[in-house]
Length: 272
Image 1 (tube, rainbow, N blue to C red):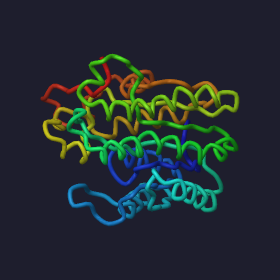
Image 2 (tube, one colour; image 1 turned 30 degrees about the vertical axis):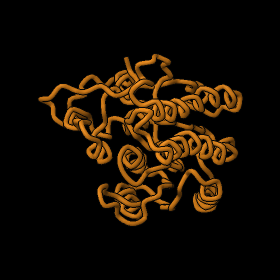
Image 3 (cartoon, rainbow, N blue to C red; image 1 turned 90 degrees about the horizontal axis):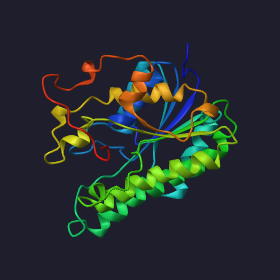
Image 4 (spheres, rainbow, N blue to C red; image 1 turned 180 degrees about the horizontal axis):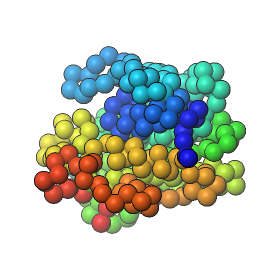
């Protein structure tokens, strides 16, 4: 049976939400999880720190290494990767999960927020990939999984929030380029995106997001597990959608992922 037992996953933003859900799914197999996230002390509006995440991972059967990391900064990312390798002996999987969001128009987006989104989403994804790649090249079944959407250059996805769209598509462009760049080395580079909105704590503080019309983070975690247990040499350059991945694995009933089964699901951004 496929398993992530003994594999080491470096997951950015794994203190809560989808990143934590992916970590917990891998932990149930007995995986090693590097929690690379900023939250050390409790956030006033969002639950979870690197330490509470580590406790959950250990309780689920995994081995956790909580590291305070701002993925915008080169020294912090490279330092975290070095600690991970010293602790676990290598890195098998990188999950680029950390992301900053602001669904604001051009005139309503402060440059500080613009810099944050480009710094976390694009720079952070590129930097984490760059730092992990030499170690992934030594792994038996290396994967990079980035939580970003299929590239769709329709103006309707740019007009409402140009800065955020550029930041997320920047992550997707890393997938497109790196998949081909490292294909011969057998390093899988793929993207994963949800069909519907995902009811994370972060979504709940976005006005009008309607998390009750979404699915739980577990659908992304289960889809990620399916991708990360595949042969890296035959699974690269894909822009996966969560329920498509699970349907391909034989799942026919998605109702248990719905937050409110009696409410119609709301589609996520960037999918026609």
